Image (cartoon, rainbow, N blue to C red; front, side, top):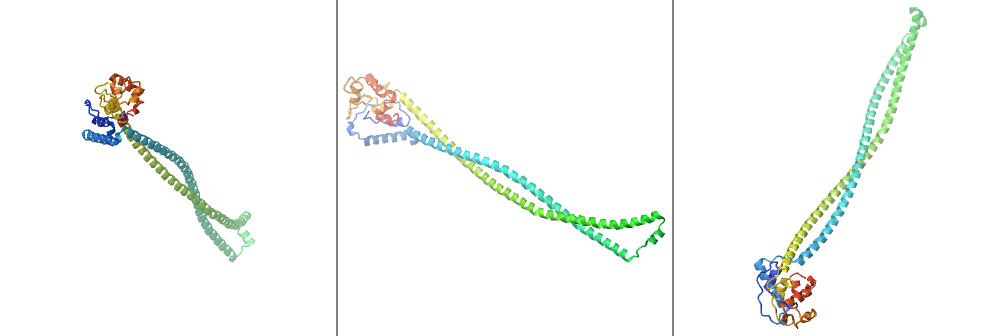
Length: 368
């Protein structure tokens, strides 16, 4: 347990390729002369030989390294998933804000269309009123000129007397008709001038009203247009923010997918190595069956019932005398007992794997 025999087979165990050849007994030097540096040198030499022969897997294929890598990648997955979730929530909130803003923008656009329509109608009415006013002014001028001409003509002409009218008339009815006609002509001229004047005044009032209404409507139209443009700019900024959030979230999800794929590959590799170790542990090995996994026995004693080393460890399982006696061994030292007794007490010490730490080689081959 405390002093193991470093064999070339150890390299094949660590590399994941167990050797089927039987271990050969070897003469051992005392434990005190096998310094840790010597053991390390032997292990390095064994690993290099095995690597040259079997193309040893890279360091990250070590079960412990793979477990650490898997844990690191799980932490990265949690961070990336949390970041992607936060970005997703921000993207959803931004999308809701964009929806609200788009509704406001549509309402502003509708208001702008209404005000533009009102302004266009007012401007059209103003143009028509001004055109009508020009026509009325021309008509009034013409009516005034006609009335003036008639007045001049009446002033310069001889005023018809009643006697002439009566004498020239063909009876009393004709006299009344001529007098009524003269009154109607005079009244008609006056009515025409008055009507044209009223139309002109109405057109002037409409012109003043429309002229005052036009700048107010233009101002309101410009205000609504400014609001529409501002909402459009804010909406464009929100759309850009949503696109940026979506891009960042996609990048996080891609990184999460890559990390998860890498972790899954590492887990598959770890499962493969553990399966190899399990097969190695279940291998009976030459001279078996053994109470503990054969690779540990192969590393500790080479499957040989070795005499005590300088530390006192002996037997197939390299047990110290104190450990041997504590387990209830029937002999002073382990190598003096039968293999069956050594198997029984080693199985007791192994305790289903919970006592693997009692063997140095268990840690070296990844069983502890």
